Image 1 (tube, rainbow, N blue to C red):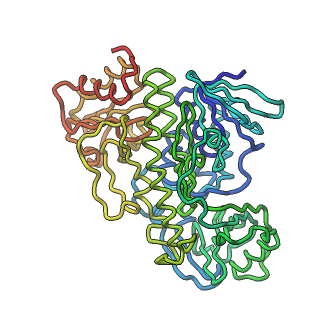
Image 2 (tube, one colour):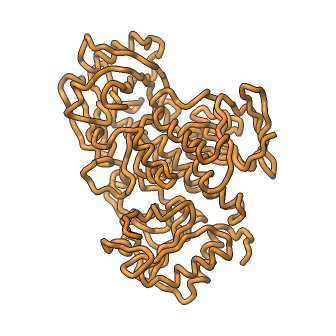
Image 3 (cartoon, one colour):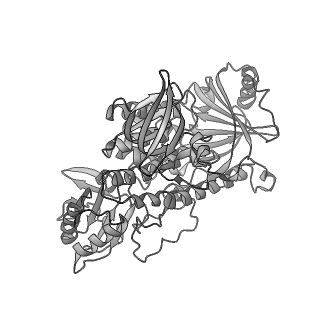
Length: 540
């Protein structure tokens, strides 16, 4: 029998990210994947800034970016009657605009899933050799008060795995979710699609207008040409009503539809793969049963409009991994794990609903006839508020009585703030002659940032963390401080005076904030840690 702290079912981007995060947190895991290797189909391509921040924290940002396209190659969204024909509309993609000042040190990246997964696999294996088991399927599991006993089947037969926790990142059809009897809530069928991977040279029609996607609008055809390498490797998405059949979509038929969408009857097209599927907008009624947690598509199905499925799943893993580490290493009680569902499920519901609204605005789905536009609502690919908008309300956060900043459009607009529960704002700082983001200082542990005169908070945090065995870094920020604030923006961005402090969780969300000094900083911080970590019984 194999004994491991965490078993992960599924080696897609979510399962691989969970493995990487756990390894960096010092927790061993084992990943089982029924496929023989990583994805051979592009599938998801858009990696948003929040997910790239996670990859940056994991030390894999540059490698992922190198496997994808430069941001300048995806600056537009284009609607056209055909690729070679009349252009209907062109938009600048604000969330990845290379000329814009965006609220992150980690910019958006377009990297197709079949290019992304090998990068994550190599990184996971480099961190913990022997962790990944491909061509190995989770076929059964049972749980008790102490852990999960799983049966996995590989080339050598069946093996027992004993783990303290199981992460089910096993996709939209999730056998683990079904075994747990967790129902999905929402709209199970919206529209049908056929994903096509192809080799075709489209340089002539895209060279001067590099776009992430080219949306084709014809009376009898709705299709999307999806950039992969921007030259000869492309994805192609055919949108169909629910009553359409997938059967006629042979390679020959798909090639003919591609030629129609491009508007070049003699175009040389080589079809490499065809993947029919049905779009849905559903969220699991629970994200956890006992010691088993759902993540990624196992927890939520969302239309691909905007590219939020992969991103939401990786962010699920980010939220869960540090909490598992905290419990397994003994500096938090097991009840901290209750906050995973409390924090991530509402965000999953919100993103899924917004992706559905976008799909409807594009004329996709049963409500398409009432859509106000057949192109896309203005928020499409401009969803900065959604990308950074996970604001948690759980016992892993200490409220400070403030409200979120008001924005006109919460989907598109993002106003950085350090209100507890929010993602900590990105601010450029300086240390040892180099520039770094506030996020670069959050290295898989709690991080306390104090103002220039916040030394008492910094010192108290270090003392409390040591007494409770909580991993923590602490810095003062300012002119005469541990970390310099060359632009003088940090204190105002974080909403504190120069003697206040902010505590950031390992996942980059603000846990606690105090605007100014306090008479007893150690007492306040110890109370905060005990409340958030549920008083794990660590020595005082």
